[in-house]
Image (tube, rainbow, N blue to C red; front, side, top):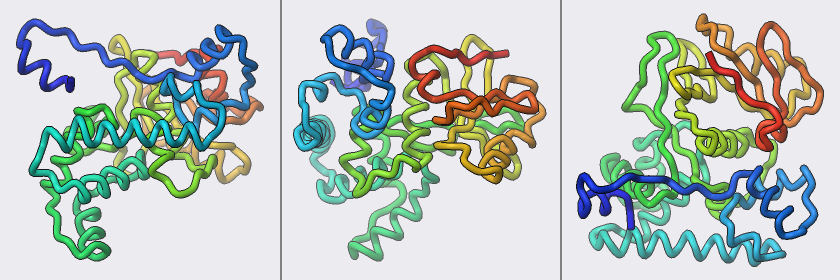
Length: 284
């Protein structure tokens, strides 16, 4: 049952726990418990197919994709469309596909409405799109991440990005997989931050953005995510994202590089080390 339904039926008598798919560290533990060989290169498998536990029962990608696709279709049909008979099934599926495939990217309901009007020849309002988004969040297909104004130090409640609850949900709705696509990495890091108990925002300054503001126990840090820091221009861009921030809280750049490129008080951390809990984020 969806959380909103439980809250209605059992007002004042519920405590909600959100159960997330396996993290990469839990995937490692699962492999070891089942005497399966594990290597850090499986990060690419996890980045593509995510951590739904039953998907590890399948050995080939076609079967994994079929399982996740059936799971996705079941959620759409059973938990959303069946419970909301006035929803246009095709429109909802088209929009959910688009949102999941573009998780982490700039979101504009107006742009989606315009695109749908021009390419599908059907009018749909921004209000309807936001209504569909709300139903996707309640069905745990994705999370909405609020913007955090790093200058005014306040949450911008009406501005959100969206991340898929599991990477597999994004993959089945994407035509091609590009491991260098930072948005895939961002989605994975966002999910890991939730697993580690952080409240997560995306950071906004007056002229730029920081991927994440992670807060726990009243303390916070700032995070940039990159694939590889393969050039000086990439290093300057990722580390330079923190330059408008006067807050002294710890700042991190996470990438798949093995060489430590920390400098100017900004810590560089390997993504695999972070996911396997070999290194922890410091907070102030």
